[in-house]
Amino acid sequence: EIYDLHQNLRSARVVGACSEARRVLPPKYALRRRLRVHARWLKPPPVPPLLRTYREISGLTPAGSPAPWLRQALSPGELERGAERVGSVGLVKGFVLLGIGARWETKRWPVAHFVALAEAIGRELGLEARYAASPEDPAAVEVLRILPAARRAELVAVPFREVMAVAAHARAIVSNDS
Image 1 (cartoon, rainbow, N blue to C red):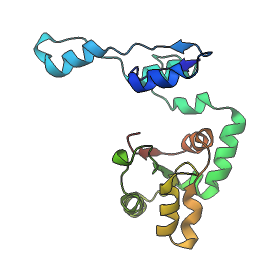
Image 2 (tube, helix red, strand yellow):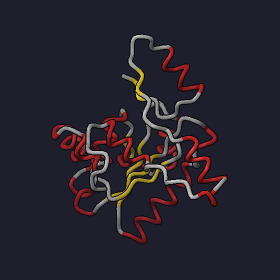
Image 3 (tube, rainbow, N blue to C red):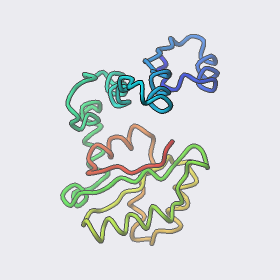
Image 4 (cartoon, rainbow, N blue to C red):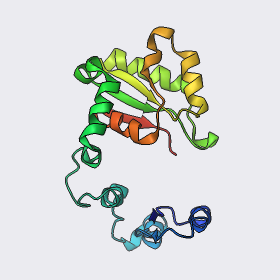
């Protein structure tokens, strides 16, 4: 199954390349979204939050509480591996996961800004930081170049599901718009 959340020309081409897969089209509410922006005086009903769609796709109750639903979508083994990757100090002290990677260069915030943000979070909130990027993302290489050798373990350059296991333990997540 392919869940096409964008429902645009690009995603249609990707889905078309997978002829055997079943395409699932969650409601997009395109007209209602446009009315809320361009015709507010008509007072159209609000669009359901995207979180509801994500919860439904992961097999959780769409209208459930806004509790950390990501923890419910991962297996206990995945959560345990994520906790090991964070380490006991990060779990006790707390950490913020910074998603430094981005698919498109135009949506990429400079890595140096993420490093400065991590330092401010540590200084002002007392939380550690972890940097997440896919192993082949140029941002992973750049953060290793910027960070001192003693802090290079803060980079989590693993496949997406493993990053989600780490993210399930984070106090907050900050990422690019990808």
